[in-house]
Amino acid sequence: MKKRDEFLKDQKILRLATVGKNKTPHIAPVWYRYSGKKFYIGTNTKTKKAQNVKKNNKVSCCVDVGVNAPNIYGVLVQGNANLITDNSKVKIIAKKILSRYFKTLENKSAKELLDDTDCIIEIVPEKFTVWNY
Image: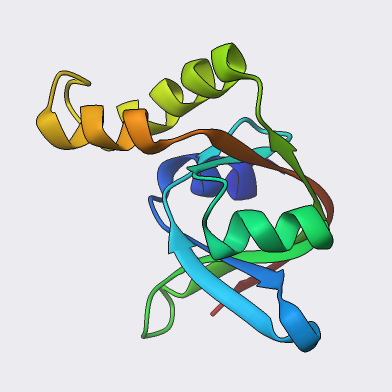
């Protein structure tokens, strides 16, 4: 689905839903990269979202825009998440993610984020739901 994939590659914020203690939902807005097949989110293993994925790999996420028709478009994804912790893979993927948001990775904030990223949440979609109005 070309429009959906172009939209997901172009947008900047994804809201990730994981399941926490007592089956409580945890939703976090995150920066991400969409490869056309999988989503990648850089984070730290100490974060709530990473801890939740370790315990329950079922996730959902949403990317959407617009408040007035006909410019409302969104994609809801349900799938399974894996934690990538191999340092060399983490740094390669994290750089690709951060390159979407910074002109250069020499930026102080980019360096700090890269240093703090010790895992990647990889989401393998099982179901897509698209809406537009």
